[in-house]
Length: 459
Image (tube, rainbow, N blue to C red; front, side, top):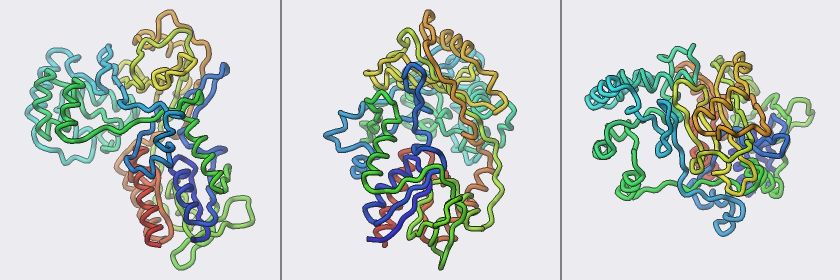
């Protein structure tokens, strides 16, 4: 057994790493700069005791038995703590109406002229695109008409109407809206047998989707949402308890001041305000790489992207939600600034409250433009909230410096900082979303799990 490991970053990935490392190291210390662990997988509570999540974070199984047991408990015990969701249900609001069967915008809701022109362009776009920027990519694969009438308004909603959309990379499409619905369902189903159309068309019926899964011998993972009234915070609390019981030393409200190296290995980790350094045989880094570079005294590529502010309206209503099947919903309509809704009673049937969260991305100076009364009116107009419902309690949560606007310069600078750090130190594992290699939570966890096992096996 090795001696001492240090984990920097107390999100889900950092908590998982601490648990795995404690099996191989005598001492493991987890350092988190905020006042509690969990990152964005946390919940907030309103005055009436209703809990809401900081975002639509619904974890799913990774397909690795050991990892899933570590994250969610033994399969025989999961029903006690989790609502196991076999099919995550999502719809979208576009063109003034809901489609609860698909998360993708339906081009048939456009005007007749735009729809016919768009279909003609789409059917002629049969070559794969080599574009690295999302607007020209969509113009290549969807055509100019659908790009202008569907994709452009969504990008403006997420990244700002002031943004130069031509500079956005493919990273701007992380929510998957570059697929659309077009043609009749049977025609689209036939076209999706061709890879070039499969990449840009969504299924319009569940039967077609299931048939494709059977043909490909594929399946969708199980999703998990806590049975606890505390929302996704219950997952953080569960993992934190396991980490503490394993003997990991968790230190919150701590910042790294410097890292001391010898022979290409980090040997000491200094925490601001603490005279005694932490000795280190392995450093698991689940925080932005530039912080480590500064602590090492290495060159850092200036990286000042525009960071969007997230406003999340958490609402507790006097009447049940109208939609009783969807777990979360996308709002792709250009006349609404809301982009996503989370419907908690559908995630946790044992919920005592009629609660939902509505998310908006904006500039910091635009926060006061969004007020409760206007959001309630909009949700009633969209027929999400009963027209006679009142808001019993709420939280307006403002999270600054959340989504970066993904320009080519931002991604290149991230890659340079990551590469500099990875090539400068041998006993470091750079992981998490801040590493810039994965975005979806399951992918982050799988990559970290594999890297840890590879490192420990080699050791």
